[in-house]
Length: 332
Length: 241
Image 1 (cartoon, rainbow over the protein chains, first blue to last red):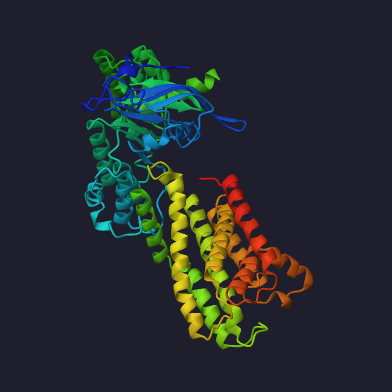
Image 2: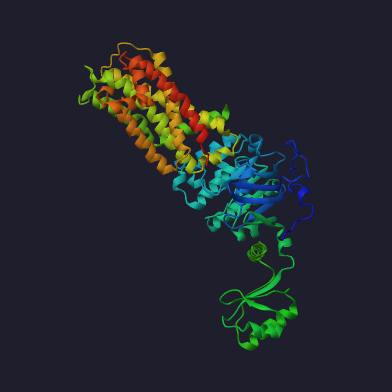
């Protein structure tokens, strides 16, 4: 299993100046907001999460990635205090969510992957309800405005689009004025403008010192938002680090050209292995040295092949993810 | 207390916005009471149908609210992850449950505030009116029916729960001595009907509000057992998601 652990991760304090927690739920700078150690979750015979350890710092956005059934939601539900751990220890804001969920709930914002609202409830009424439950003085109308739904404030939940529902859910999480926020697929089904709104809000939460833990299988979203990425596969944590750390040592040159390009001939010409990864997409696993780039473009020009969509440098998160999950599968 | 009040307000807001629930909790009981009091087609065995019907319809109203309305609403809330979402807030499960019970109580008060005057207007003249005992019976009935409704809601998916509780509502309505006298039921079915919470509540209410229950002592006992056992079963079997 590849595991990239950022040095000092467990002791990183909040970037936005909000202090971290202590063991008694108080706040002292320099302690991770979420600390998971040796977590295992079983449902009968099925082991959904196996011996997972990671931490998430205040003021940062930590993306939890993985395919469906990888163990993301189970892990987050344990952190929320909604589900009991079979083994291991979890501390959120210094509190054990299993025994002190009530205290934790006062300081935690939660966004479910779907639903969570009465179908007949109206947008503003729902946000007002949650603001009152948290009692932190959040202004319901302002939250509705912030998530871009001011013109839908009297619409019933069942009449909202998928993206609008996600935005209401985010407003409910914000009603807590959270110190830690668990957001499950926040941009799932959301249109382009809605995504921008959600990203701005999520970044704002982190900038204000909140530890944002964001579960997603939309890699593009993690790439845009996350300070740090944790990758799950089949209940195991297979990588943990910043995007730069996960990409390090995996530079590549990726380009599109003719579907019939002779990769063997290209490899002989440039002295590097070239692979076809799509219908007309090719990858050379090498740093984008100017000489290599010149050799590649010269060879393509000599052979009369087009060159489109040339991309050189660090691997995309999508490719990192594919590589790591493939390696993990091979190891098991 | 603030969070409890907030949740109660939301629960009541949802009840008033839900047409089906209003029909079930208010429309059907009023309709049954008025129609069968004015149109003498039921074999009530009393000179004035309303004297038989009024306690039975009050029992029906309790069943509609505390079993069907509560059960269906909670079942859908579970299916739609509303319970899960609320579980992550400072509301807590205890206050959520308390708000639901209070909401049922408020709706029952409204039901009685409408049904009792309507019954009197239709000529209901109970020989005895032991309202404190009747209220005690209503409390026991509410516990029993809420336990049954929440047992279904805590185990079945939304639509299946809806169908099951509506089916049970119909069975209990017909077998429960609410609108059809026990004496008119076949022997074996009559024994079952007496053992049901609907039959027991209707019989107790008929005794406390009219003095013409068929076997009130047994009915009190049956009602008390249901009121104790059903919530315990619900608590043991309920799943929050």
